[in-house]
Length: 127
Image: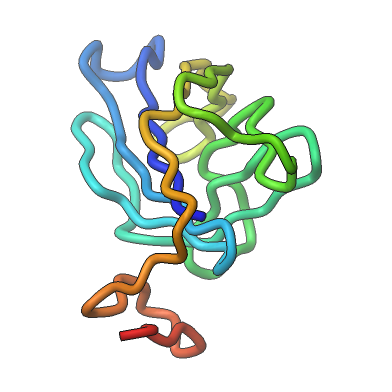
């Protein structure tokens, strides 16, 4: 399953700050599709605790952003239009900066990219 999530409305950051992320549920990874006013690496790992989804860096050690209420393990979702609070932890933020997330697109097919987006040596393209 591939999920496109839009993040925005971060108080205290650039007023037009946003990011569009592509979440690969099966691989447990994400990639940055677009952004402005937010510094994010090109890709990273996902962590899900059943209540929220953490956007982590490639090393997977700490959360850059937490998407409250985005349940990747759910059998019924996520669905287009789902929304929730996003907590931004990445620098320069010292404490979490609240924002919003919403699901723009859900592709139920397994993606087969021509070239692997992720730099992880364990990632293999299905092409």
